[in-house]
Image (cartoon, rainbow, N blue to C red; front, side, top):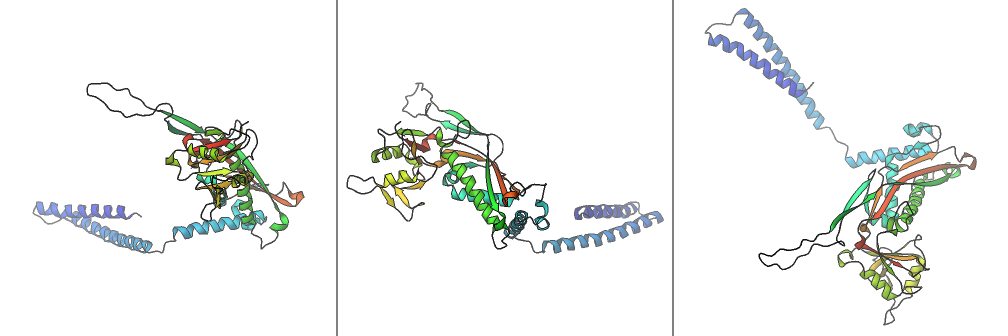
Length: 376
């Protein structure tokens, strides 16, 4: 029953009742028997509607005063339920796994668990975390303004003289999607240990595997696949077979001051070791330990991140990146697809967890990032 509809019906009945009285008054007579019968019927219907309306209003009051489950508490209960179901799936406890047991040899895990994996990837992969991320499916076209073609200029002008219009061009980069796969095996002996946090283990293992793949692709790219930083950034080549302190300064100066605030260096551990040995004219080391920095070291006032995916010093190698990595656009599908396969590795006494992620990355602002390349 709808309260609004009940009120409309009451108004109609009341109007019909008043019309009977007004008609008799206008004709200056008493109501006849048919009019009296209609009046009494309408009066009865109105009183019944009043009771119904009162009951509906009371119900609404009681409903509004009903305690509401906080959004955070409701979200947490969903995550806990999914966590328990996924744990049961890995342990092959089908009754407790519930709806997750789909198919004979695998099941797609809940979105909340997949999101935890992605959150962990973001946490342990700084360049992915700091890039301009888009969580969408399909092809994404990102427009950008290219001032290198011709910039808008302002100049003095005299009356009655024409000026020449100058403007840059709008260009765009297209991010599609390339499928990557991560595989993690979980020992059944560990699974059988009831005290072992098997879900946490899987989340960490899968996140670590996906993060390593993503970081490699963002830093190095793969021909005809993900470009990452391999194309489109500013480049400085060394004069010799190694880099110098002056060349690191030159690299840093390629980035406009407007983008320096959030810029940092990326290099391998061996390259960082080489940088640690560089000194200025007064014999002071250039690389400084800094407890307040993101990763413990600063170079010319900016943080230094080391990655196993960066090349060491050798001919033709990109040994260092510097910049604000929002200049890199990354696209990852909203749904990471993770499956648990219980039979594939059964003979090896293991359960296989298989993950697929769709990713693409391209430089969207070359002014923000530069790389140092050893002379080849």
